[in-house]
Amino acid sequence: MTDIEAQAIAVTESLRDLFPATPLLRNEYLSGKYEADIRLKREDLSPVRSYKIRGAFNAMRKALDARPDTRLFVCASAGNHAQGVAYNCSHFGVRGVIFMPVTTPQQKIDKTRAFGGDAVEIRLVGDYFDATLGTAKAFCDEAGGHFLSPFDDPDVIEGQSSVGVEILAEMETAPDIVILPVGGGGLSSGITRYFADASPGTEFYYVEPRGGASLGAALEKGELVTLDRVDSFVDGASVARIGERTFEILRHVDRDRVLAAPEDRICATIIEMLNVEGIVLEPAGALAVDVLPELAERIRGKSVVCVTSGGNFDFERLPEVRERAQKYGGVKKYFVLRMPQRPGALRDFLELLGPDDDIARFEYLKKSARNFGSVLIGIETRDPANFATLFGRLDAKGFVYQDITDDRTLSEFLI
Image (cartoon, rainbow, N blue to C red; front, side):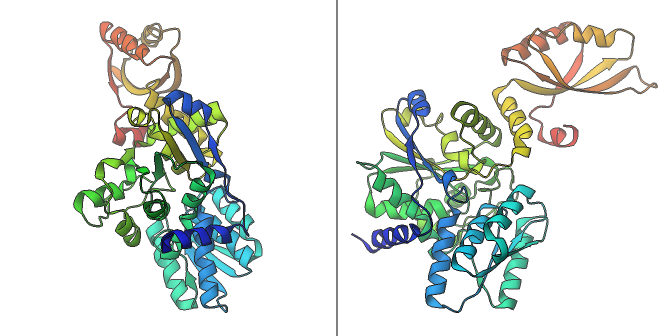
């Protein structure tokens, strides 16, 4: 047994004082759909509904072992890391100051406060995480606390490797394939390093949100890259720059094994897992399941583990997630229609709709000085093919329109 294996196993055993191993469950629905033995490592069922509790526990345990008089821990987080730190502050009986962006959903703030109780103080600072992080580090230096990185810390990486230990402990034979979500890289690097010694024959695939694919960018350039723009929708995994320590572990990964998941498709996966399996996943937690269609040919007949990394889903986001899933599935579109300003024009349009076409949005701006007005219309239907029929009817009747469903700029301003 190597030192890395021994250390990972020791960490896993120490975690049993905090919570039992999360389940590794065969999913019959996904297994049948993809003709493979697919199991979900349910990190969404940890006490804080994510794997982040592991790294925070290990980093805090080691800090207290080195300096038993440490009484202040500081972190910056938009959600899951904050909850893990709060839970462990209460467990170890130490004080925590947790900095969160002002834009953090109230659900995550409330959960962090509930897990930490009187042991933690929450400070809302900055509109974006980078500003929050800078303030947190400055406060930590001034107050003489111990800063807890969400991913780029050797003790955090070691703590996350316990997920891999539990996977191998639960299976009679090692899995053929493990699919991991990637954000800052703490989870993926920890498991990858452990498996390199404990099960070198296991293959890995890594999944990033398309709007925050910092690992893929770094692998392409051969060095760390800071993305110019990040889509924060997958808030648990969208980072502009993967960690330095985590990249050192992952830099030898084959670029072809790093996949980018489009945000709208992730929404469809969240809805599918909720409706079919009753499993609540946050966007980052759905990443590993989301890429199964892309890997269908490669995983057929194989044993596969998908790490569902978190389930802290704010149900106030459900309408947005549902709409994005519909757009990805091609059953909802938005378009701007040029409507003649004459009596009966609206009726002419409505008569072109099919029996399964439903108007979900209608905004009409009438300007008396013009012969035409602009109408923003949202249509839901049952079959994507219905839109081809509808647009054919509009063309035949001479209506002028523009499909803006996939126009990011117009959608942000109009929808």
